[in-house]
Length: 186
Image (cartoon, rainbow, N blue to C red):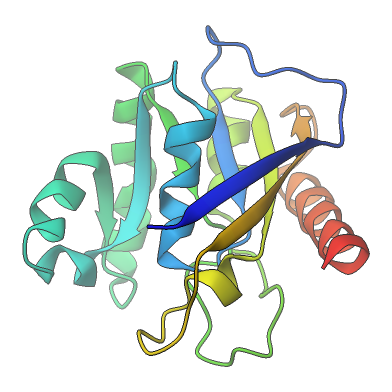
């Protein structure tokens, strides 16, 4: 697809192949979903994804197998995500979430407000959060199918946050970390 990436470590911490993580990053493109597969080759990954995407031919069939589906318009579905993610974690999966909850329609938004899910999961299951920032995918592979081009994405490995603080503190720390990386490197 003409997509390459450069991994830039902003931390001296390392990913441990024997540790389950809650993996987060900013969300700007459908290709964001592919990067954790490359970055975590030794981990079973389970994504939290919106239910509407299961309707896409072929992709939807695969998507249903690797995702915990959430109907964002249903409070019951949103609440059930925690239980289903807990089951996946008990099976040995790391969980991939994009805490913005989706890609905003307004393309001028660089980083949208974070939802609580990733940070609540991390706290409840004592799983560290691997924080990444993706820069360049919005331009290379946007949701607008009439745009895009081959190129190199910058993937910043920001940090591993231990679930010692409150979910609110974890959320704030992760948001500020990604926001700072976007400001300094975009």
